[in-house]
Image 1: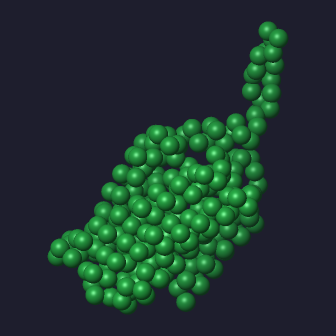
Image 2: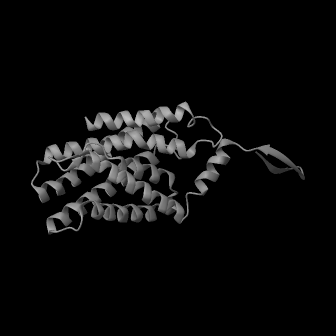
Image 3: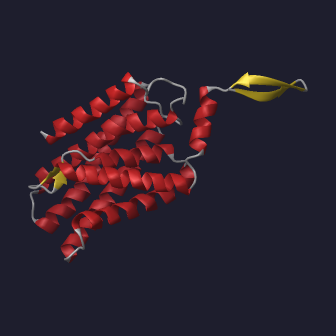
Length: 231
């Protein structure tokens, strides 16, 4: 499309750039509709991750919710991020209650609070790494990819230490095995989904990158990751 512009007192028309389209797309990500959509996506990812729970450590071998949460944080303007944290925290609590029923003991409650704090800490630290790599992430530079790796390795490691500690205290499972599973599961969720979701959200609407064979390739890639994690 062409946009009107004023030059030397006359109206001229200029082509809309990809940055203009990206700005308009992100402009829609500011209202309550965005928060509701994020909550739904996070809840779906949460319950999908429960399919990969290891009964020994009570943690998931792959946790897509971590990737969905971090992608939402990257796409959300900074003034709205406090609302996003509240939305994700409330969604996590409700999803946990729907999945496991009412918390029967104080230990169950402590484990749930510990996991919630771990996920929020991980999200904040991972967002800190990514925010300092670029003002507009595209994952096309070494700096941005390195920041993503730091988010998956360091931020997820910090979050997994708190989350696995609360689970180990509540249920008597081995800490190090739980921490390793927690760390790997959240890291895989970040590495799989954050570049995919952010690139898709910021892609030009007329771009063929996520159509036809490209879309099939992305879906096949995600399925292969999930199958490998299941095995």
